[in-house]
Image 1 (cartoon, helix red, strand yellow):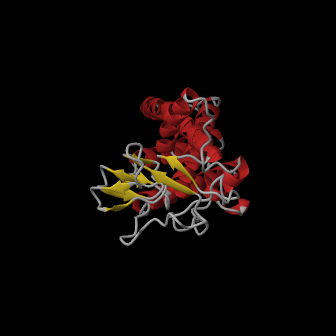
Image 2: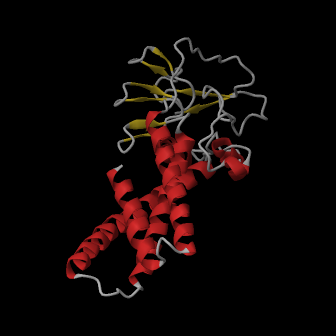
Image 3: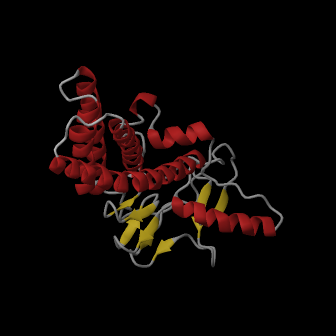
Length: 271
């Protein structure tokens, strides 16, 4: 929050003010746009921190005879249905136990130290949207920083010049690595969303692909139902709400559409 606050105030009251002046129409427009972007970033961060990522119901029991569930995840060793010894209940598809939260999380992606929370079924979209806003804000701030440097100073006092240099150096020191790191993170999660995978499933899929190739078979991620369908499953069917922290479309997190839904015969995938 300190980093967000510093970037906001330096962008609005230093970069925009020096480049356009906050009393001009372009200055007011840019300040309003950056303020709105910062508010959305902070709000989505707040929701990602405090929203429960998804709990497994205490009475959850997998129904292996349900014809509407063609995929049942099993243990690698033994072939039994996945059961959490620590939580003492069966694991729904795509659920995993978090050692930090000390409980199973629905469609767990990873435990994020920056939000002190798991990224799972109910807060994955808001986490992704937060990263989108954060990347946009960092790039926007970098553009404002570079643009404000093109303005020639008007007889600035030596003390004020030293203060501004400090602001510019600290801002560049924060914005450049943040833009790169968050940009890579955003690209990674765009890839995962288009494949309908979690970070955990990606690493499990690497092993599954290797084992399938070794056995002369072709591995296909069972939850990959097509790029656009995958996108709408995470962000929602309404494109206008993709960048809003809404999540009414996500369902219970106990059952997910698969590539085998149209196949009557049941099949199993290891996880």
